[in-house]
Structure formats: C-alpha cells, structure tokens
Length: 197
Image (cartoon, rainbow, N blue to C red; front, side):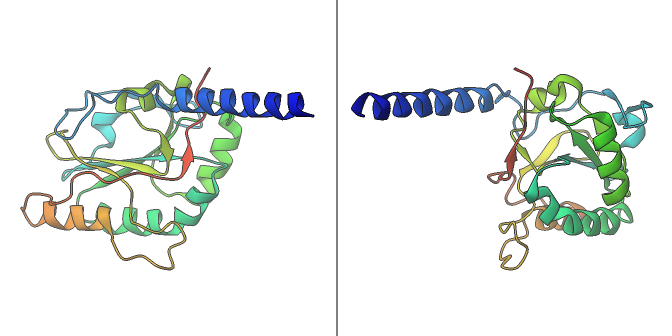
C-alpha cells in the first residue's frame, strides 16, 4: 500500500515537472519594446497572409486563441467587441491558433462561428515560441512602429462578471490619446498552449 502511494506521488511529481518544462520552453527575451518582424502564416483555408498586410494604422493586436479552451469561450464576446470598436480607430486584431492538438478543420469551424477578424494558424507553435506566449487568450499589442507596447491579459476577470481592471482597453486609450501606456505588462492567464513535444 505504501509502495503504491509512493509510486503515485512519484508519477504526479514527474507529470508536474513535465508540464512545467513544456510551458517554460517559450522565449522570454521578447520584451516590451521589442520589434516584430514581418511574418507569413496561413489562414484556416490555407491562404497565406503577411503581418504587413494585416496590421492597422495605429497598431495591431495579436490574440492567441483556442478552439477548445473554456476561458477563450468566456472571452469571445469581449474580444469581438474590442475588435470592432478599435478597428474603427485604426487598431486591427489578428487571431493566432497555436495548439498542435487542434486540426485545421476544427480551427476553421471555430473561427468562422466566433470571429469577424482575420485568424491564422501557427504551425508547430513557432510563432508562439518566438513571442513567448503560454496561454489562450494572451494578447500582444504592437504599435504603428511594430514595437511591443502591451502584453498580457485583456482584463482581470475571466467570467466577465466582476471586471475591475480593463488592462487592454486602458492601454489602447492611452496610446490613442498620445500618452505613454502606464501598465505595459500584466500576467496572462487561461488555458496553456498545447505545444509540439
């Protein structure tokens, strides 16, 4: 009985270590102020799109999405409302699907049903690794000069019922008013990106 208990503890310890290692394979060098280079990725229909063709006059918001994450589902309405509001102000939204566990067909169905802005598929989670993204939803706002101006969470409540801090909206508001963004980075949360092993 003791041996069984020991083996269970050992198993879960190794599992926790594996998960931690898997999450921490991201690039922590992509910091606020880092400049994003032009990239090209396919949409769910297989058509390639470049960052330079999708970016907005006043910046671009990259949001990591998932077809299976319940946290993303809770945020979908807020994401779409923000995308519509700020597209009119020159900030374009681009969704990125990086989970290797989600097929193109699944992503296509999910994105068609939920979003009106462009979405791209990040094969082998190369782009997520480049930015250091770990969660869905996790957002990166690049200004008109393609420099990272905000990274982290959309707000401080996944359910949407008790929001007290609207991080992303505050960042947009300050930037569009010609001010320096006060809070440039917050802690992202949600479902972990399922990376290629």
